[in-house]
Image 1 (cartoon, rainbow, N blue to C red):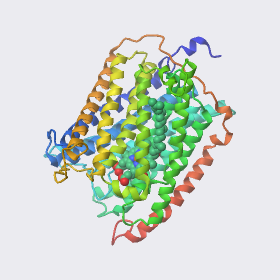
Image 2: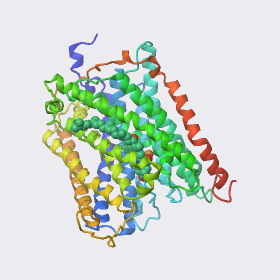
Image 3: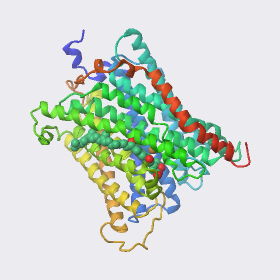
Image 4: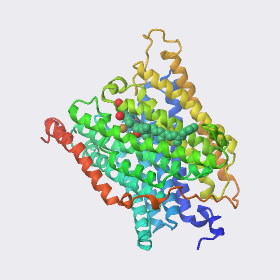
Length: 561
Ligand code: HAS
Ligand code: CU
């Protein structure tokens, strides 16, 4: 029997052991965010020639550290924390064995520490170790073996985390044979399914090629093959970052808006579409690679265009759910309902601004995905412009905003200051609007990405509005605002942790307007979706990979053919 008292319990009241893991994962995530932000500000001021505190020879070390700490460490530690919360909360039962839970957390933390050390050692000339391979780490760039070994340990940690959640789900299933999979657990299981498929390729690339090559066991590798295996993983990984944000948009944002999720079935459809379509599209990062036939690139483009669908459905469902809340609270009119929303709450405004920016990021993604226009923007600063809207805002800002709602649930401590929180999320939005817009614009001017010295003084009218140098100023100001915003976020969280515990913070999540009972049973048939996903992967990748190996050899030209 669920009593009123129970619904007044927070997550930490009910599941103190799990809450500890969730907090540890979030804190690891935010430690990485801090490091990533420090390297971010160094880099933005260096590239725009505002302040050069590192020699340009260290630029790639900074860029690698920024990328790896942000998109591998910050995002994925947040994900495992959030998913642990979501599975436990929605199944309403503890994880099977908390020791296993701590084991995967420990593996992830150890792996990331090793990888982090190998990168940071690049700054110390007296140590013969470096890993300036950028967060994409494919050949021909080569890192110290510790970099790959750390990554491998980290990924194994995420695999065990997935197994932990699946096992807990199966135990729940035995007790509830006829019930629908609770929505949050459904989201976790589908996302992890995608992750297993995607990360198998990068694991193969690291264990079979990159690590043995870096250890000197094999002399060379086939760079096109390691690039292709990377992008097999490299596209779906962006949805691995995005799905925690979607989970919050679907299941928490409607509650904060004072409403309910509009449609549970539609949410399930979206996550199933991601399982099916996330992987057979990776070649859209390789439109300019020689060695892959145009036809395969065309197939990848077609799949990518279909892959827009789940995000477009998300835009509809999430906005509809928020509108439902606003209208329930007295909002009316075509747009008048927008004034009946809790804009003073940082968790609400942060997620909404993140969504708004994702609409822009989605559009630049559509540009990227077109084979012909891709030639215009590939390897220019447009691409970092794109991903600072997607992972850098849709994901990062949603995660920060989510913490303003989640942290009290997992610690019984109220947020230190909602005002600072509100200021912080708005500052992020302004900083990113400046930085990312200017990056897109510079990309169109032909400014390359991944270079320390983008000196384009040869441009006509370099200082005019929209010219190279003026855009540099926008990037530098934007980057600085983002750094300040991050520090405000971390400071607010640290002060929150110092707050005394209080009672009465519980915020139970409401059920959807259209619930799981309206969703066709087949949506919960994970076996079916995995099988179809695997067939699609084979169709998209078997021939291109076979062609790459038959032309270039398993271990590069002249070897292994
Ligand atoms: Fe991307 C490159 C195509 C989404 C991240 N992408 C990158 C790279 C990264 C990245 C990191 O086709 C660089 C990799 C590198 O280092 O080389 N991307 C796409 C497409 C999508 C897309 C088609 N990307 C993402 C997401 C990312 C991400 C998500 C991270 C999380 N991307 C590409 C391509 C390249 C690429 C090419 C290669 C470029 C090159 O040449 O190198 C789609 O998934 C986007 C779909 C999104 C939408 C938007 C829907 C809008 C919503 C908003 C709802 C509004 C709300 C609030 C909730 C269609 C859901 C409303 C607010 C109110 C106030 C009312
Ligand atoms: Cu992609």
